[in-house]
Structure formats: C-alpha cells, structure tokens
Image 1: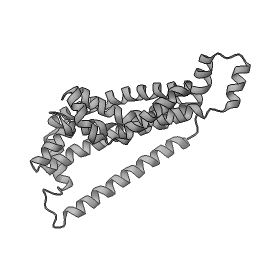
Image 2: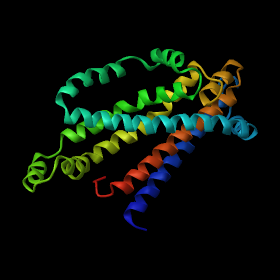
Image 3: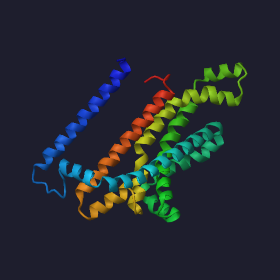
Length: 253
C-alpha cells in the first residue's frame, strides 16, 4: 500500500471513529429525561430510515437533482464571471460590487422572492443553489487567475504565445488549484440553497419532508431526513474532491 492510500485509509478511519463517537454520545443523551419527541434514539431513527426507505428515496432524488443542477450552473456561472473580471478591469469595477451585494443579502430574504418569480417547481430551488454556490467559485477562481506569476506570462509572450494560449496554458493551469478550492467549498454548501428553497415553498424534497415531519412531531423522520442530507453532502464533497485530485494530480496537497 502506497503512502497516499495509507493516508486516505487513515482519513476514513478517523471519520468513522468520529461518527461512531457522535452516535454514542447521542445514544447516551437519550438515556436521560429528554422526551423522545425532542430527541429520538438512534434505533428509532434507523427504524424510520428503513420503514420509509422508498418514501425517503424519492425525496432524496428530488433534492439531489436540485443540488447537482445548481452546482453545475453555479460553477459555470462563477467561472465565467471570474474570467470576465480578469480580462476586463472596467467590467470588474462594475461587477465586483454586485457580486458582494448578492452575498450581503440573507438567503432567507431572497427565497420567497425567487419562489414568487420561478414558482414552486425545481427552478426556484436551483436558482437558490446557484446564488449560494457561485460566490465561492467566483472569488477563488478570480483570485487564482490574477495571482499568476508574471514571469510565466512574460516568458510565454516572449515565445510568441497568443492571448488564447496564455489563457489556456498559463493562466488556467496556474489558477486550477484555487478553482479547485472554490469548487470544494461549493460542493459543501450546495445543499443549503436547495433546502432553503424547499422550506419556503415546495411539495417534495428533503427540506419539505423535514418541515412536514416537524409540524407533525415526527422527530424520528425529521432526523432520518437530516441524516440523509448530511450523507448526501459528504458524498458529494468526496466525489468532487476525488475528481479534482485526478484532474490536477500535479498540484501540491
């Protein structure tokens, strides 16, 4: 086993240890006088997961489709916006205040407006996810593009590289690690927008299921939906991280 595989195996072991410890603390907390409708036992949540597996799977697919769609659109939009600001300082001066303003407004404040504009379908949830995702991608990619070593750029110009060649072979390659950082952040926060959109107005998805279960005091089902949401977020981050490790394996860890 090579050192990288040993490091990854150790990471999984630590993660499993932390998860087991949290479940143990949770189980110990349920042994106190806390009512079951406030804090269900791990066994009750596991039973809710098994008994409602088909029902939960459908809502998980709905939320997953919203998250993945928002992630793809948000990353594309963020990357294009960063490229535009790098190549046009005038455009940067106009766009950067708008980008910052979009993050200064609380997401909860925009959610009802987006539902009003796009309706109760998937569009509003995807728009919410894009709104949450595009900023870390834009910020990280823009920072990576503008911090390219000028010596590399001068050398490429001396060799007669065209602007397109400079972008493709120098700027983009140098900015990929920063872009990867933004993409990992986007994968971690991607479900936030979709879930908030489902809380504001939806008839399906994990966010809707959590609100519905909370209103009916079905705390075990609420915890089951929350567990699936956490698992989905972790798997999404791991998938993105694994893909980026393969694409930019030349970058330092």
